[in-house]
Image 1 (cartoon, rainbow, N blue to C red):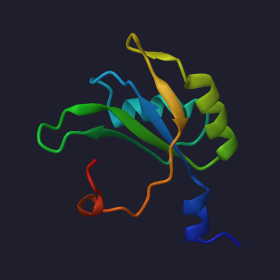
Image 2: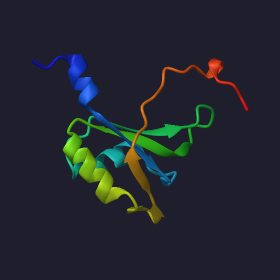
Image 3: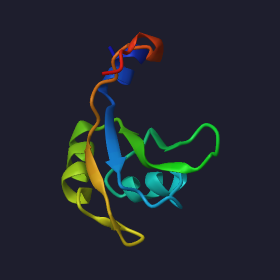
Image 4: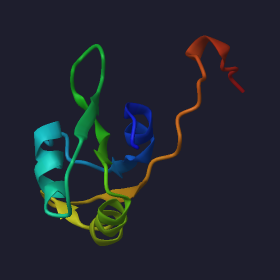
Length: 102
């Protein structure tokens, strides 16, 4: 039996870097939908200016489809820019205040 927690854990989070600043979350979603269902797609923006930071994340529930998307889209071009696509690293429960600068 699948529970909400199990379904959440099974989703693969994908990092997409070197995005053109004009790309939005809906664009990322459409780009990845040809490989399978997309649960969410977000482009990270600067909290003060609202401008894209040039990277984002896509979450896909099917690991096989996500892996295929990573393999085929890494190095692809969007609006003339070569993008980087990889499995996202797990986010640590780390608060900004606890990080030490070196």
